Length: 248
Image (cartoon, rainbow, N blue to C red; front, side, top):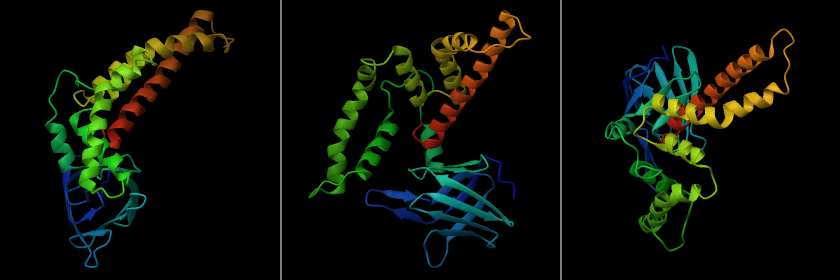
């Protein structure tokens, strides 16, 4: 079973209901291979394919998932919204509903606020999960939370700019912007990182590192290349990490 392929459907049935909403494993997932999974007869957190050649189990407390297929075992973790699974071998599954929502995101331009409407909804849900107000129903709690979250989103950039430089506020906005492709985010972040970190970091390293066989100019060129590649890794991992959370 090739677990590194991506972009095909996996149909899972059964879901898990929390106090707030349904965290669903049901539906179509974009996964390595097309396979239909269904709950075992005793329910629970184990799903088996037709022919029982593939088994997926989930520990809902930690959101750790295990996939058994053809004698091989792969582990991974479900994100808090049950919309993505990130496997230990680098493969990722995305829930069909998540993919459909992304397709509805209008291309071009920028989000008017730091968070999109979808991201605001995710924040409201997560805040609601972490709070329990006595005598209030879940729907009443959510209504109470929604206003402050919306207001925070509207003022977020302005308030960040009151104690952060504009470049770093812009960097966070880029990471959160659902209208930008990962490649565009990476390119724009590299420019900000280059201005704010690369040049001063190379200068600082150049005063502390000495490569005897190189001239000062060659040494600086080498350090610049080393720092550039390190920072590229940081930027790429930051973009991928945000994507994997399901928030963007």
